[in-house]
Length: 99
Image (cartoon, rainbow, N blue to C red; front, side):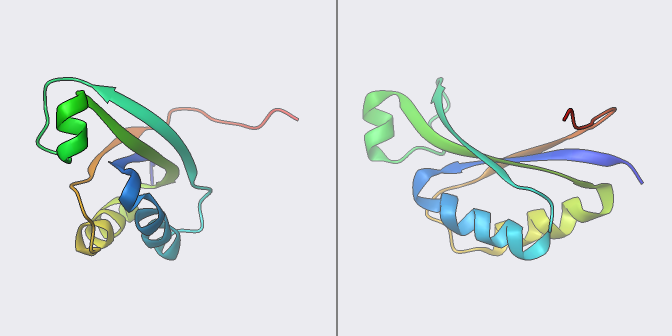
């Protein structure tokens, strides 16, 4: 089965919850980083973000087997979040560890 890099982009207020949901469904290492999103799509923004024009988000990434995508996405969708979460999955062609 193919490996995928699964990335979720969520509001800061939801990041801890989304991370816990993901961790409860996968043992894969979960990487988390802060992001500032500049753009014109404010459907996911709270009031402060709409005024400033900058969305503060957390990106949560993990590499998983393809069959795990749907269960993890469904679990995040079912979580009680404050704002929408965007996600995407892309194939991992090669990876490794350099010691």
